[in-house]
Image (cartoon, rainbow, N blue to C red; front, side):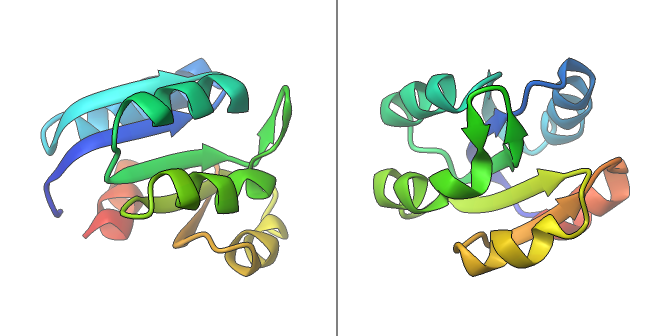
Length: 115
């Protein structure tokens, strides 16, 4: 797995955030977690993440609708959309996501997508 300096996880599922943090911890210096798109946007403006895990279904909107904004704020970031709905993949990639992961996620699949 490639080493990253900063990661941002935007997801309202606390268990998934815990899993991601534990999987990323050995290879990422700093990991921030946001439970809403608005909170994610605020954290994004304070740091320059190398990778963003973006849930598509959040309390304050659809993650795919923020891909363009997030890419504008952090053009260097790899954006990985995560969703329990497999049909969201096409839309995520169409809107500019670098990758898509279907929930539930396994540690091995997270390593593969970040390699």
